[in-house]
Length: 206
Image (cartoon, rainbow, N blue to C red):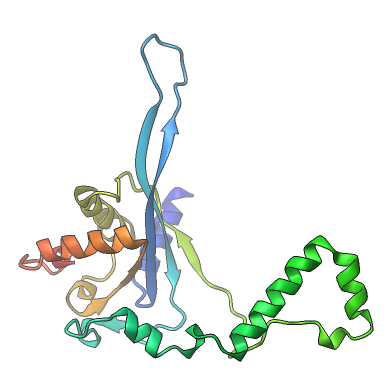
């Protein structure tokens, strides 16, 4: 069974529409037997998933599509997203959540108010409703490295891409794989990319 799962992961690694998500977590390995002086040990490892990116264009993302000379600032997001401003849609959302909060405490009273006029009950506005679709995802195998450090991050990326997914090597020279995590993950990825930018092998350049 394990061999089949590993083979399936490698099959997904050959796809050009995958997204990789990972993060570190800590757990305490408790003592299974009583020996004087032996204490539980805190271990830091990493877990992750591979997700099928439904909106990635056919043929996958290419490095030529990425223009790293253009920076992204907070004002770019704010100025181009009117939904971040207080508008009629936000007011409808606020009214809905306030109504639901009151309903959770006084359901009978709220129910009686809207029983005669159910259409007046606040609802979440429907905007650009996405079609229903199932997201394909696969859990990565154990990654016994601490993703929270630079050295550990090298081990994490090697475990994911070299040992588990094993994509077509052309991905490293021409392709672009999206990797998601928290802010620390993004910063560590940028760090190892900067350290390895002069590496001779495509994979080592990350």
